[in-house]
Image (tube, rainbow, N blue to C red):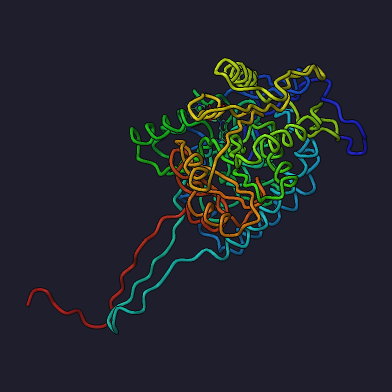
Length: 500
Ligand code: NDP
């Protein structure tokens, strides 16, 4: 594509892609084809095969063989690291193309897509080091006659089911770490945003990843995703998506081979703002936390808990910020909030906005559906007079809808924050270190931010408490998650006989 063009436009015709099997793309051929339209423009952009069960079996067999013959797991960590570093370099070279397709299929602003691709490069670079740093443990304290070694071994074939909200970022928060561990992968991206996963397959192959180590099947979650979760020859499944499908994946594991699961599910994440915070900074952070990626973000700060003495003033500050967010064509450099990714999600968000009003919450800002470039858009929306029992306050909306609830003291703030089945992420805004760190300790969340939100990097593990999931991705924990421990007990010298 032409990187010099100042104004990006969708392609004039949809582009055909194949799925990726054993180191090569396989065109759709006789298979059904799914055509994806850009949610920001309403025009078809990509066409992908709907893989059959036979295709899935072929992909799993390819990953199985690549794992069992040790073409990847058997390499020194340094050689795995070299492939991951080369992949980082190739992603950097293709960053503009990847960001463009991410924006076309997902509807996120192109500037944001570019930044996310930049973050993904960092994931590969960091994970490369971890491929070399991964190690076990030893016990040299068992007396002169014995010692113990604990080794880490890659689990095997990993199924990877990723969602449509951050197709490339979520993929890259997992793939380099899984590869660093020595496992092989069968990836199943969301059908509506699969192109950048296929681009990663090409990047990895070009970087020298042996054939069969990374396969990509395309098709719908309910058909091909479900079959991947049930597959007897998949040793672990990493699933990111809805709590409902998370439950079905747990069931599928129990009914098949008890494959290990990594789950990153929903969130209803609190942002706790004390009166002593820098309220201008906090308002900006809270606005970012709910409008970023149009709130289609498992870690969106969708519940604003604010100290009562400043609640009204602060809610208005946030609303003021949100009114200025530039909602627009995702391919426009100036856009801050793009399109809603799927028709179903668009309907869901609008139904919650209607429900909030029916339940008696007060809509103080947003709620509109601007007409922009033929796509589907929703203005960032703020509700006040929200009570904990309302659906908008307790259910994950996965859209740019903020619910404001006041609190009187720290204990009440913590109680409201924890009054949810979820425990994915939370933020506190306060200049009082005692308050901020006490809240950080007591709020149940896998990720916590102090005087910021939606921040992080490849070093920090991600995942949830409670119904938000199992296990951790990224960081060293994210590599170890894809390994299993083996205890090796060694004895020296002459055996002390059991039978005289
Ligand atoms: P899903 O959970 O249906 O989709 C997530 C992924 O799972 C996609 O790759 C999907 O494939 C796949 N999938 C769907 N059904 C199955 C199945 N039975 N077995 C295995 N994989 C399956 O989420 P939705 O797209 O329906 O979104 C609904 C809600 O889920 C959102 O409103 C939001 O609340 C939550 N969500 C949370 C995410 C997170 O990051 N935690 C991400 C996305 C959604 P395909 O898309 O091809 O059908």
